[in-house]
Amino acid sequence: MSTTAPQTGSGNLSAASAPFLSWLEDWVASLPAFNLEAYMQENVLDPDNVAVISADLVNGFCYEGPLASPRIRDIVAPSVEVFKLAHSLGVRNFVLVQEYHTHDAVEFEQYGPHCIRGTHEADTVDPLKELPFADLFKIVHKNSLHPALGTDLDAWLTDRPQINTFIAVGDCTDLCLYQLALHLKLSANARDSHVAVIVPANCADTFDMPIETARQIGTLPHDANLLHPLFLYHMAANGAQIVSRIV
Image 1 (tube, rainbow, N blue to C red):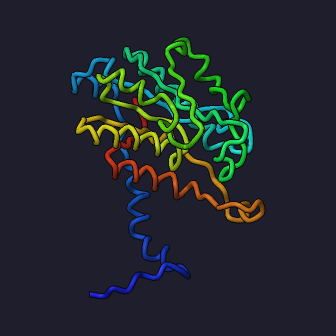
Image 2 (image 1 turned 60 degrees about the horizontal axis):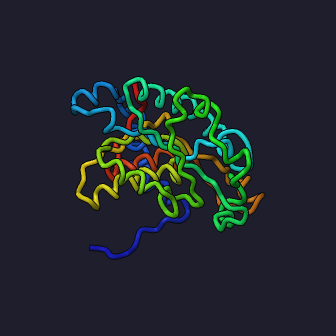
């Protein structure tokens, strides 16, 4: 058996990965819808067993500032609909995990200044903030990509051991939402606890940074068309349930 590592330069990577990429595209296209009410009935779930948790549905990623993206803006409306549907089914556990950076956050070395605490960028988007049940929202402020490092998220979860089903929405698919979904799932795995983490693909997305634009501003490119489905796959590979949408 050959021990020579495969070459990945000069187009070899794209050629070698073509079958997987074709499969990935088909997989995303065939994701099923998820009926939340039927799921709760079939699994005999009380509404208190369910939580809806979002990652970074704030102005600085959805509407304004250097990291705002039209792709992220477009997930606000379907995400709000998930909140409304869950509330109509009796769910009262809602968490908004949100960037709330210090003025000299170390993370700015990677992504530049964004969502600084006390600015409009760090505020919850209005379509969520204006929901009539917004007083139920637990806001978790974070100073990094991770939802639980330096935050009180785990304390909130510990106080609610009955929650065994999470619907996770938000951005970015490959960054903060990915960290959120994996934290919820892997923390449960470490406790040998069966927890469902459900991610609707129409309520998730990431930003796009074309190669030429990245060269001009001296940063790394970021191909949203690849990274969004690839990280949906990564979440699925680690036990999250990826669906097309919540109905």
